[in-house]
Length: 430
Image (tube, rainbow, N blue to C red; front, side):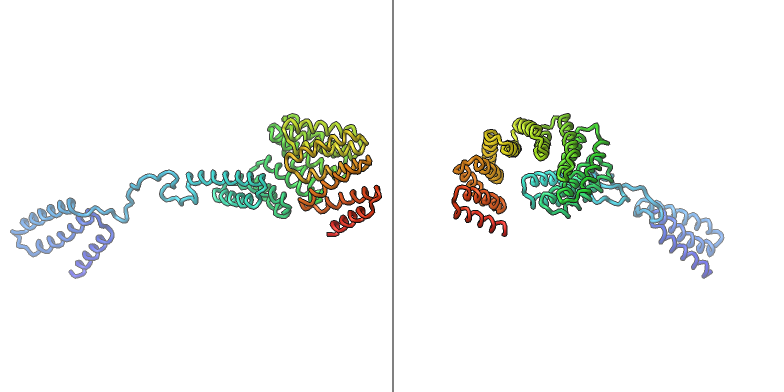
């Protein structure tokens, strides 16, 4: 009998522990009244057993009603209930999913922020505010990484490479260019790769790493040709051909340089890029002048000047006029040389370019000295020296002082000649 009750109590404990809702309570009540009914029914006289059964049935019915109405409606732990939580809001993951690091709306906002920082970096780079440009690029790169925008990262690295190359931070520039190329390759963005390879080629050419420069230029051209239907591709090809022409010209590979320049000019004409045409024609004029092809050089210079005037690029026009003056001076066409030098000086003054003015005045001094116009020569040399001093260009000063020393020696002023030569030697030694 004791084992019977112990088993019933164990069963009750299991029910209480496992099921805690109102139906579990009803089951527990049924168990308890069942035990009581069994005990009373067994000990009741035979004539009262029917009454005992009726009484317990009525009590059980009342308790069941009370349980159903008043018992707490907690859900059972072992039976899953449907999820009644509200649906996720915008930018939130569904229940049970790991939330992303950045929500969709936040990602869009951060992407715009990064693009704005990139644009700011480009603007500051062009304006020569180099430290601020580097900081803006750094901010843009950090945000593009946060939102996992790989193309954005590539654009920043390309701009950063251009900045570091301009500042002579060559290792940093090469690293940035290399990372940009890797990103663009991963994203299969061939125009981006080609653009950065062009910058890398220019960097390597500047450093005298000629084979690496040529390899970069050649790879860039191949990539541009794969995208030949796009106008940007032709512009890119023209730019890289210009760089390749400069490299070949520096190495004395004149036929290759002329071919590269000519092809670049053709591409610039196809897309009506007058600035590009003007720049390459100026380079071609320098090449032809070096090779003694004076008529071809004059034609190239004249065409370049016309393009620079059309787009109101006074610096470009002044530079080419300076080269044309040197050419005419060399050929003994003194009036034409003087006119070209005078126009160049006027343009340099308009844009406050003291280095350009000083360079042209030095050439003008040589011209006047050769013509025995000593006063004019001395005046030109003196103005050039003053401008070089203002911009702390010691080599420029030394070069003009040597010319001035030759002039003073020629006209029999040995003391002034000695002073000029001594000062030139001191400046070069420092």
